[in-house]
Length: 234
Image (cartoon, rainbow, N blue to C red; front, side, top):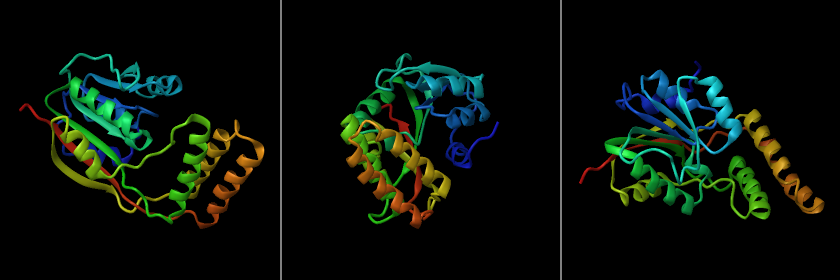
């Protein structure tokens, strides 16, 4: 089972073997696969996306896929030993992040581990940040919310400290983060699909801005970090 090195590195110093574990926002199941491979059991993969749920079931049959909003996880209080949020918080608004932090706290067992793996905000003029800016502009016009929010590590530490989580460690998983041309192209395709409901002239203007950035890609920048927290019993 192929598992990204960033997932392996995030889990390397955490007591996963035999733990009840949860991947929050399972996506394609990279974190779920990593938890199963590291010996966690049971492993819950939580996602509200039906296509993602189907893909994780096929890829990681050992896991229990839970189709649910992360703000209302159908698990008991104090029932999870390890929570992994790998690349989750960059798609959450501040309000969503706060509600999900409260729900993580509810399901976490005493002394549970929480791993938040995400990206520092990018330099202002980085091509990939400018591309995300176009995606956000389109998303806000169409859905009224941004597509991406890159939370600084210190901000997430403060958020979880308010819910009784103690900081254990932070380590870099990637620095700088590579943004290969194929990933840049994938985000361009996503921007094109998202812009379909917009007025043609406005969509063309925004997409022309996004496509002009491809000339400067790829351009490695920023950092992917892993924030390790423990659920306080105080």
